[in-house]
Image 1: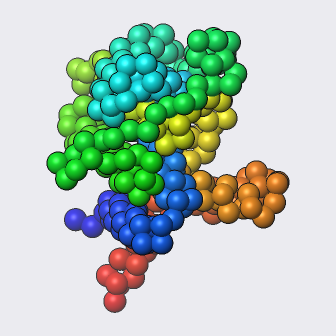
Image 2 (image 1 turned 90 degrees about the vertical axis):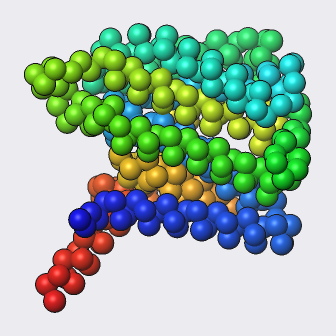
Length: 327
């Protein structure tokens, strides 16, 4: 059965994967550092945007505080790497387990309300966390934490040095890819069907014998884990973390990224993150007023493609299929 949305998602998946491999090969040959690190950062923030899309696009919950969990993962990863052991797998493992607990606790607070009240509660939680970190001297206060060591990541093919941009780009691509595959798997399960039902009409769910509280909590915890694990990669890339990672601007950019790429597609936010990061870098070299230019571009895209770039591509594929059928 022809489904333009599915075809659009598969096309974007192939486009991003092939572009990533081409960038890696070209960057390795040319000994490029800037573009490989820029692409790595785009993937990391794409993971954050993916967590927003899980709540917003799949379950119908607008979270304005995903930066809290992203920053939590970044700070915890930096602490593990500096104070315990410079181990990639140890840092990711501790962040994953801790974020499950954090998401479980936060879900009891945030899921007590719906709609705009849910958005405000998540925003409030992030603001409180950011202020606490900003004023905690042991975490570097406003200066953040610096001096995160360079890692040697063991693989079956040999040790990988994270100071090598190409190698860490592949590690990041693999990590975000695993998170994406895990979320796609959940969407094929009965839990995923319940999430879609909650977004469509939560009140009617009770009439078919299902409760929405449990599935919403699972989605919230999963979104927390995805955001935190993505954040855990940040200090490995930059060598430091800052309380700015928990600011509202980070959460706001993630929501913008989701809308730009396509709400409810999971892969759209990653595409949106790549484009938004590229816009900031390229336009930022032209003018100090790059935020104005990017804002205008965003407005044009939203007006011309209300369902994001993934929706625009799906519309194009659908019309192309219809024209061929008419012939």
